[in-house]
Image: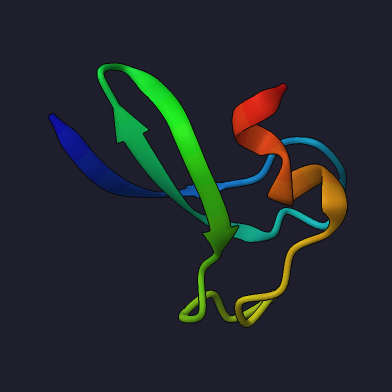
Length: 53
């Protein structure tokens, strides 16, 4: 089952908004949350690789 969830990236103090794709309990994709008021859809390389960490 695939689902999409909104989370805050915990990897640094910027706390960017993330849209995560979850498949079978594992993160398979991460992108910026365009509706996040602080990051406006932008994420750093750490956030972009969130599913691989």
